[in-house]
Amino acid sequence: MHTHRRSMGKEIWCLFIHIPIAFVGSTCIGLVLNAVLLGPIFGIFGVHPNQLPDLGPFNPLLWGCSLFLGLLINYRTRHRSAYWVGGFGVCYLVAVLFFSASGIERSLDFRLLFSPVCKDGGCLGQMLVTLPFLNSIAYSMGAWFGLRFAQEDRGAGARSSRQSSEVRTPWQPRKK
Image (cartoon, rainbow, N blue to C red):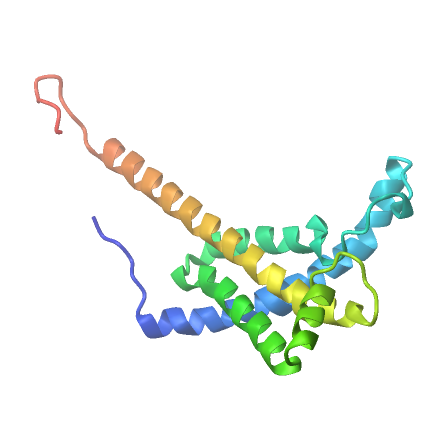
């Protein structure tokens, strides 16, 4: 059985391709989908968006596209490094909290960044820090699932091609 392994340098290079896709690409796609689709979808059901709870950056439409994007991209590319994007998201969040404020202000920044309600100038912080952090975690999860599904499909394809290539006559014993 032949397994395809990329070199460590190639995997690291691929990781730095997945990071901007997760941080910037999926964040922009999520914001556009939220702005374009949310109103019309609720309009179909006769619900006004103001009647729903404000989830802020925790809106599943914002991070759900990252999950789906990670799954689709890594199903196709099969990069083992793609599911480490979430680690960079955690490092990004820690760096922003560490370098932006000190002591008591840090806990206030943390509350503003992870509050579902946008207040006291926290909207920009949520869009530039919280949303990319959440999207990187969702992208990593999607990339992990995408790699697993791709490996299962490749394994099933290899088994079926092996079984179809083995022509057995009735008097030959089965291979175990």
